[in-house]
Image 1 (spheres, one colour):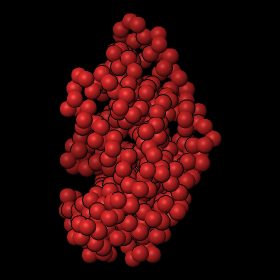
Image 2 (cartoon, helix red, strand yellow):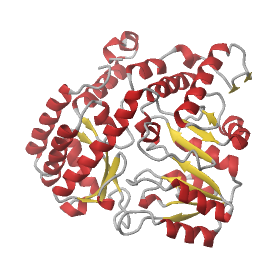
Image 3 (cartoon, rainbow, N blue to C red):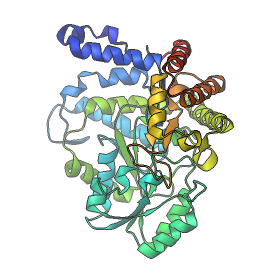
Length: 416
């Protein structure tokens, strides 16, 4: 709901109110191209701000440690039923507080510290929680890695070679910066060949899978995690899905293994988002995300930008800014000054550091939520080109920012 309605907050804490108001204006006036961000619906936003936050609900429906759970159980059961219907999964746990804790619970349910795991390298598009040495996953488990080839694609024959050589107990398939569809069935075949568990992290593409636009790992994999924001367009949080035979292990890993009481207000908002994703119009939305991403990649290629793997199958792309003589950090700063948010990102085989990498990551979920389509995406591609090529021209960047704001007025954020 609009910040202007938060009268109690305005009177009680004017400093926080003003900061939120400024952020509301920033989001309204600027373009969001960070692939992991999106806008929730007014209904999801309202659910997050309810008195359910007052309740403490350790345990699961019908098996709580505190009294007064009748309505909480109703909310959680509804959310679980909707996840099962949305993804056609056997078991769902909707209590995970965020993506990394969900992944930690998966590892806890299936592995022991020191077990070997095969995952996608972070600098090739993986995630910190897929075994990076600075992350808990890399500290507790022995990760070996696969990557992409020079063409930007994962070579499944190479994955099989590594799996046979290393004999991991689990294979992780998923990403934070890979723009191609995943061959879930082949991952499963490789895992079966060596007797490994299969774990799919679909945090980035859950909405595209729920919307019927990308292949699902659910029929093949033992366990699947996802955040509930990003393309799924829900609140910040996560869920875990698995085969029934692993249900007890997953539930015990979440509680009492990883967490205490769940965030009931967030679980209610998750339930609302799942209902929205079950509607026919969500499929149209998911399809438009991919259409917009393909158009954006194509336009940028026409403007002389290097796109990793030369395109995209999903909602995101990695753009190698060395093709324009810029670093990813320089491009990110220039685009932010022009009213366009993205994030600097390493590209495969990057020779630069993570804090000043060669690329940026772009995504189309948020602008698609605002209703933008092919015509607007072409405008945005032109602004990206101009901002990067005139990164040192502050007057040019301000001019682009003014044009961005004009476009945004015609495509307001839902509920604002």
